[in-house]
Amino acid sequence: MELKIVNREGWANPELEREFALQDPVRADVAFIDGLELREELNLKVRAGSVASLSYMSDVNDVVDLVVAPALNGMDVPGHFLTDLAAILCNRPKAVAGPRDRKSGALTIGISMGGADVEGLTPVLERALSQAGHQILTMANDAGRHPTLSHFLEHKLYDHPADPFPYYVFSECDLVVCQGGLSAIEIALLGIPTVIRSRSDFTPAYRFLELSGCSRRSAGSSTAELESTINFVCENGSQRAQMARACRGLEAEIDESFWEVLIYQLIKKEAHHEAMPFLRGH
Image 1 (cartoon, one colour):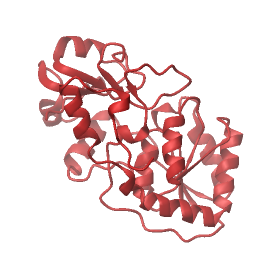
Image 2 (image 1 turned 180 degrees about the vertical axis):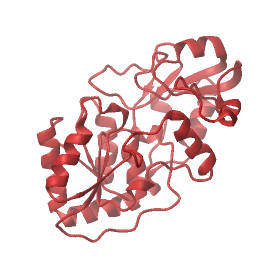
Image 3 (image 1 turned 135 degrees about the vertical axis):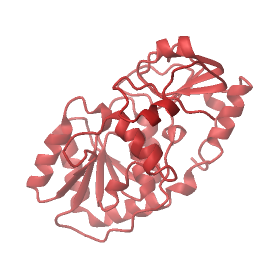
Image 4 (image 1 turned 90 degrees about the horizontal axis):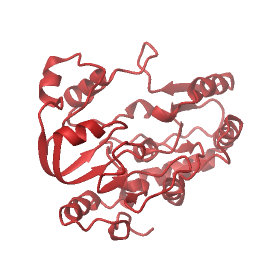
């Protein structure tokens, strides 16, 4: 397996650039590509028997063999999309957060709206939840800025190569608010309940987490509806405890053979939605 990275921000670490920058053409039986604008790199530098995209909005999605990602924002779902959230599981924590026993009052709440926070909901939620007396944690660094890609990769690939799980910052949280993408399942595997902001045509992801009992979805996508759902979960300690127990049992629901089966089917040119048994019992 070979990992190559397209970093248009520039490399702060020359050693990291030498090892991971996509410079020369790569050849593979199967190539997994994750990014919004990679059409040029795919055409010029990737030679693979099968290509799978891991980004639902990538500019390569109309030419690859398979897209493994939830469908978002009301978009149509072509036949070569796999849309169950379990299919895009990437990181599993080696340490699970301990149970929280606060029944009510001020809580520690994480906010992880990710790259999809184009509406700038994070500061709005920070203000509202802080005014309600809660302690807020986000993914920003100590200076309040999100790290550059180069620094993020250095931390993930060099500082913690054996355990690159990105959400340990939320280990002390009673609850995390997110958009329902990949972060939702990874935070659930950490043992933390989530409130998911409803977004159109995201039902495969919601269904998996809701059936598992790990998350509660807001009634709509507005800030008011999201805050109402957060407040409900904050005030309902028994439900939070039940959600946390479901999170700690989520690992058993994931079929670990998913990626092995997928790679085999891609090599054999057999991959399609109906052939992917990625969940047991759902």
